[in-house]
Structure formats: C-alpha cells, structure tokens
Image 1 (cartoon, rainbow, N blue to C red):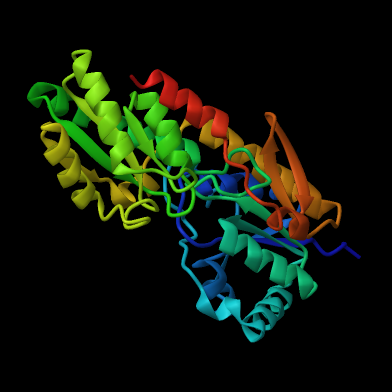
Image 2: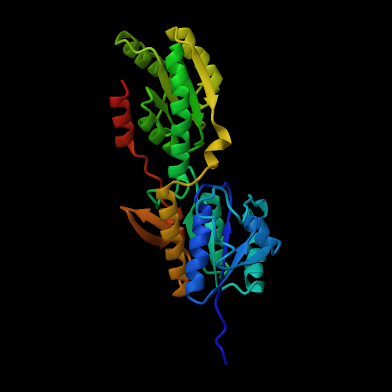
Length: 329
C-alpha cells in the first residue's frame, strides 16, 4: 500500500512585505521535492478559519519570485486573538489534513503560530515584515526592499531640495521600530534621524541644522519614523516642519511615503533570504519539528523555540545610530 503523502500548509498574514512570494515559492518547491503535498491558505488566518485553501504545485508558484505582495493574499484576523478562534484554526488544519503549517508575517502573525502550536499544530514561523522588529532575527523578509524603496524616493526628493535650498522632512513607516528610518537615513545622508527608540526634540534638529548652515550647507534631508510623530509633544510631521522652517529660515516641506514602502520588486538580498528561510522551514517540518521561528543571525539561518523567541526584547543598534549622527554634518 502506498504511504500517504504528508501535507503542509503555508499562509501569509498581517501587513504584506516584499519577499513573501519568494518564501511561498521556496516552501512549495522544497516540499514538493520531498514528495509532500502543499496547500496555500488564502487571506491569512481569516482564510484558515474559512477553510479557503488551494493546492500549490510547481507551476502555480512560477514567476512569483520577483513579485511584491503575496499571491496568497493577507489580512489581519481579530478572531484569532480569542481562544475559540485559535481552536477553530486548529480544527481547520486537521480538516485540511495538514501535518504542519508555515506562517509568514510579523509579531502578531507569529504569535498566532505560537497559539496554534499550543493547540497541537506543528507550526514554523518566518519573520515577514518591513519593520525589521522581530527580536530573534537580524533581518526580516521585506525590510531590505522597504529601505531601498525609501532611498530611491528620497534621492528623487533630494534633487528638488537642492534646487530650491529646501529641507525635506520625510516620514517613513515604523510605529515602534526605527530601523527603516535609521538605515535609510544613513544611506541618504540625512542630517537628522528621528526614531521611537531615541528621545528626540525639534531643538536638537534645529541646533544641528544651524551648525551645518554656518558651514555652507543649504539643503537638508530629515528622516522621521511615523512612531515619533505626535509623541513627546513633537506634533505631526507637518507641524514639526513648520517649527523647523520658523526657527532656521530654511523652507521645509513634508513628504509622507506611506504604503508605497510595502510594495515593489524584492531586492536580490530579499529573494535569497526568503528562499533559504522557506527551505529551512520545510526541513524542520519534514523532521516532525514544530514550534520554531526561523531567523537570520550572523549571515546564518537558524531557528529558535517560538515562545522563547517571541519573549525576547528587541535590542536597538545604538552604535549605528551614533555613527549616523556623527557623519551627518
């Protein structure tokens, strides 16, 4: 009698991130190479509760490596914050015949994977978020592309800023994590980088601009993480811009980049990271291992216990921030 093939599922959840498709492709193709069946769950945990699934084969994941977004679609699922929702999700996994599930997403999605694992579903989490805010992994799928998108847009803004002797105050995503702002700010030569992890003030920005004005500089780039706006009395990005212009005499314009940072063609680094993470997840499930998060540490792919990993406190790279402040004169 032919042995029944193992079936694994894969879903993308929460905010979309460039590179999610590359993970789905790697999961599907590596699992198929091991004679497993692969089921794609549409619309994240909401789709799991609705039993909205499709079988993935070699051709259904063709031509997606280079595409942003996610062919499986995504959503946020309030029902999964409740125990009954998680229990129903576990029932759905059993009804679909899944021996394991790969969950691609940010902190909330990975906590959903943790909850499913507690209900007996072998789950492997893959950090997929542009915010780069999963403590156990140095890089998350989506981050590199988002930073490069910001750099491309700021470089275009710089041309106008230079032509008009202006200051461009650019708001980027990052409610609780300033990594997009920090990395993009360094790459763009921003005179100031305002992020949630470091206490900041308009006074400090103005003082730095005034020092730089005395040295002959006439145009400026300031990068602001969205989590800083309206915090500690700073006001919105546009209100901060008004204060800067009034106190420096430099015309200051605001650009809020918004959701454009979530889209776009994933970078080479993104595609490679996503691919090796996806393969690693399948290798864990093949061995009957669940309850793990795949991570990138020191250019190596590793995995951690999901509860331990999600319990870690994220460490901010203060050295990198101080370096940025030193060279942005």
